[in-house]
Length: 248
Image 1: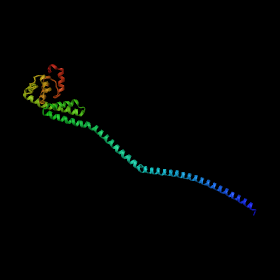
Image 2: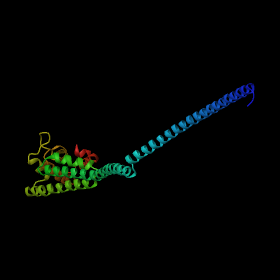
Image 3: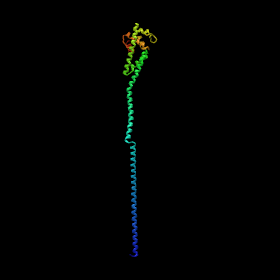
Image 4: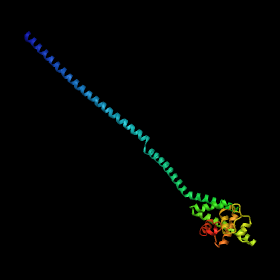
């Protein structure tokens, strides 16, 4: 061993070395702690980010599953099919209804016309002029060819029936038709008709009794030589427009 002075110097130097070592160690630990802290924070941040991303993925997956469950392909197809059926059904029903209405309307109108014509025929059989007026209106206004044909044939048939009855009755009396007309009490505006074409035309246009009108047609044909069908009032008036002196 050396002298006490050397020992003291050696101890002082050793103490300084240990202090320096402690300082280095402390600094290293501090650096390590800082680095570790930084790494920990970073790792925590990464963990949080990963957690957030994982949570987002989980939420998205769950949402997709929920949507898929609620609106899976079969479910959607069923809904679309149901809606389509309901819509198509409604549209189809409407189309069928419209088409049927379009096709049935003329038939319905024809049935109504046939009913009106038949009613007119019944009224005319009882001698009511109102039936003739209505039947004539139908002939002039209907656009249904079959209804028009039926109305005209009814009018023609009734005219022939009246002719068949009154021609025979007039012949049985050996009287002229115009005299027969006056003799049976026929009147126009409360007066007997003139024994002329004018008188016959007045009865045709104004008398409410179809029996008198039928006889007046027979008288008109007899006086003029014109073969106007019974109850064809328009034809008589057309003739009178051209032969006014005879009809006035």
